[in-house]
Length: 201
Image 1: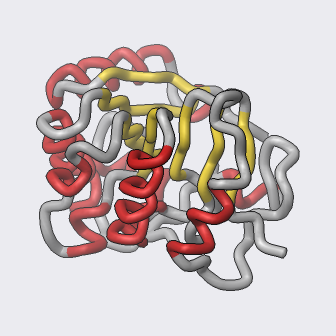
Image 2: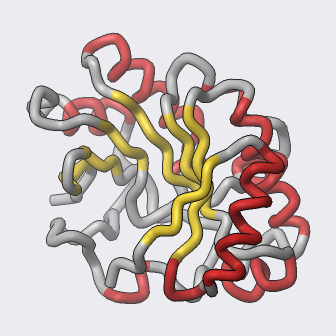
């Protein structure tokens, strides 16, 4: 049985795809089949929108604060399906919705995408990971090449106009305090907040 949704702390996480345009050196997928004690997150196939909604309906949202699109892949690889699920959830539940993303949706879809999130997504958390495009390319290894860094920053800046809460993250073990301060300034330049997150082994 596939793990489509799973609990993490105060949220229910949605695992819609295993596709991702990156191969980050610190990716959790290198460590095994699951995180936070979940069932294996490798999907046999991508679940339908209906299957995702049915899986979400199995949770009691009076016990959780947030629904998070984040699994063993990049959620925006299925952007339209993600938004269809978000619309369903918004109509049925009083719960905040977040996307954890690498911020490369514009490159994936070859068009601007942030405006599509308006009214459906409460928080976008973008993986910043580095202070410059060369370091980013070395750590994240995106299939789109060195243009990925600027595209990620552009997407994040666009999100600020459409999403109430925009956050950028760096992983503590791959950044120095000095780099984290530089990242804070980068976040300020695009209107986002910085979160230094722990590496989850």
